[in-house]
Image 1 (spheres, rainbow, N blue to C red):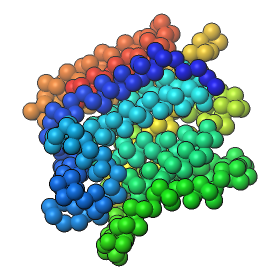
Image 2 (tube, rainbow, N blue to C red; image 1 turned 60 degrees about the vertical axis):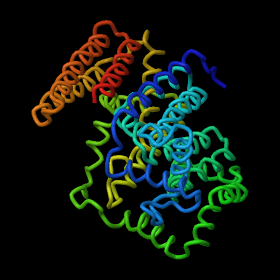
Image 3 (cartoon, helix red, strand yellow; image 1 turned 180 degrees about the vertical axis):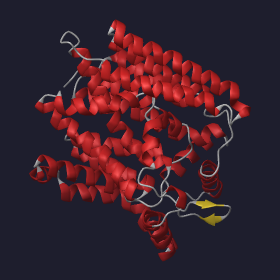
Image 4 (tube, rainbow, N blue to C red; image 1 turned 180 degrees about the horizontal axis):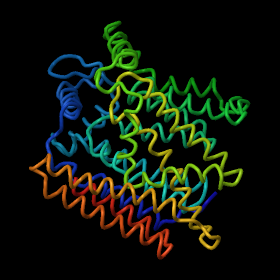
Length: 413
C-alpha cells in the first residue's frame, strides 16, 4: 500500500474547497434546473414528507430523492438560500477530489494520485458542475467510489456505492459501473473474476439499500411513478431528443475540449504514453480508465438527449491518465523525457482559449472587462507554463501553472 502524504492530502482538500466552494452563494439559482431542485427540497421539508418529491404542490418523479434529501438537510441547517441549495453538490465534489487522491495513490503512487486529483479539481467541467445545485456531482461521487472500489477489489463497498448512486439518479447508478467493469474484464480476459465478486450476495446488498424507496413510491403512487420516472425520464430521454439541435455525433467533443481545460492539451500525449510507455502492471490498470471514459462517451453520444452535464463521469478517468503521465515524466526526468508534445498541446489550447475569451468580450458587453482580463491572464500564464517546460524542463512548475490557470478561470468566470 502506497504512502498517503498528509501535506498532499491537505493541499488537495484545500484546493478543492477553494475551487468548489468559492462564490457558491453569491449569485441566484440559475434556470432551468437549480431552482427546481431547491424548490423540491423546500416543499419536501415543509410538508414533512421525505418519500415523495413534489414541486408547486404536485408530485415530481424526475429524480430519486438523494439530492433532495441532502438539500433539505442543508436548508434545515443553513436556512433557505443559494448556499444551502448548492452546498451538498459542492461537498460531494470536494469528496470526489479527496477520494481520487487516496484511491489513485494506492493504485499507482503518490505523485500520480496527487496530480490526478489536482487535474480533476482544477478542470472547468468539474468546478462548474460542483458549484451547481444539481444531482451530477453526487452521482459522480458514488459512481467514482464504485469504480475505484472495483479496481481495488473492495467489492462490498462497490455494491454499496452503486446502490447509493441508484438512489441518486436511477438505474444509471448500476448500469454504468456494471457495464464498465464487465467490458474491462472482457478486454482483459478475466471474466472469472466475477466468481470472486460475491455477485449474488452483493446484488442482495445492493437491492437492500437501493430498492426500499422505489418500492415505497410504487406502493403509494402506482404505475404513474413507473411510467413517468422509468418510462419518460430514463427510456424516452435516451431514445428521443429533448433538444433537436444537439443531435450530432460530435456534440461532446467541444464539451471535453473546454471541460478538461486547462489540461486538454496533455490528453493525447498522456493517452499515447499510457499504451507505449507504461509497464505491464500500469498498462493493465490504465486500460480500466480508458474503458471507463470511452464507455461514458459512447453511451451519451448514442443517447438522443444531450446535456453538457451528462459526461461528467468520464472526467475522473481522463484525469487519472493525465496524472499518471505527469508522475511518469517526473520519475524519468533524467532519461531524456520529451516535453514537446505537452508544450505544443497546451500552448495551442492556451492560445485558442485566451483569444476566445477576448473575442467573446465583444458579444457580452456586460462582462467585457472580465473576459478580456481572463483572456490575457490565460495567455500569460500559458506562456509561462510552456516556457517552464521547454526552457527549464520543470514539470512541477508547469503543472502548478496549469492549476493556477484553472483557478483564475474559475474566479473570473
